[in-house]
Amino acid sequence: MNSMPTTYLFRIDMNKDNDAFFNARKSSASHIYAGVALGIGSSSDWIPDLIEVVIDESGNATLRLIELEAHKSDAVISSRKYLPENSTEIVTAFLNYLEKVIRACRSSADNREEDFARLKMILSKTEKIFITSAGALRSSAEFVEELPLLDQPNEIARMPPLERTLREDIPDFSGTLRLSGDKAAALGRAILILDAVIRKCDHSDAAFKTWRAQDRSQPLKKLLKKNGGYPCLRAFISQKSGGTILDYEKLLSEVREIWSNGRESELDKARVRILISRYFPIATKINARDRMPAIFDGARSFLAATAT
Image (tube, rainbow, N blue to C red; front, side, top):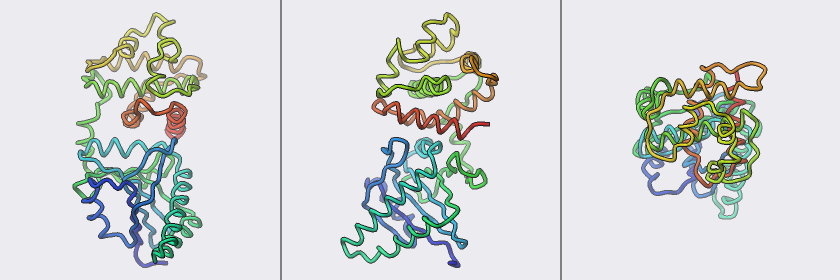
């Protein structure tokens, strides 16, 4: 085995804003490549800025998805969208990407072909490939946060001392919430999507914007229309736009009751709080054009990975 770890750095997004981070990071990499596209995620339309692969002295591999942003809170949110994804599918997508890199090297007589072919062989044979998602500032070569995907062992988590900054930018989901328009929309998005999957009403093929606006067929709106209860949740979901002050404890109790109906055992309030708070960063990255089948797939993976 190698006496030192070997690092491979792949630049996926060629945005010039990423130059500073890439130039700083590549100084510690043994092998570098840029220029071949790769989509990651349930709908294969998320493009990480960079991917870093480290092969340690024992032959184990860490594959790191890197998202770059201008602000710490945005970097955290952007990187966390990968957390509920399936690790095996990400490895498969990366191996397919490596094959494209190898072919590109071969067609241009690039002598790095052998290096990337060796990496592909190692990844194909190794028993342990750890997948993490890391957020960083474009102006720094260090990570704001790095976490294992939800289906990965928890012991590989790397949490830097910036959680205080994160808490300042992502709402504390307890008590009375004072939410900006964007954060209120993201919270509503998280509740609507999780509700549809938990109550098995996740069958739409529409884009998110269309699904969200359907008062008669959107599952939670339909339930609230038929049921005269749940005043706090009803008011929050029906709010069109803008910031709000929200009695989150009351809303949480109403959501818990809805999600517990028809189950063999009731969900407790603490469990519902965890599900919503952990899904919130993912919900912030969903846009109007995203298709519901891919969104539902991601939410199912999230719920399976966070099952107790």
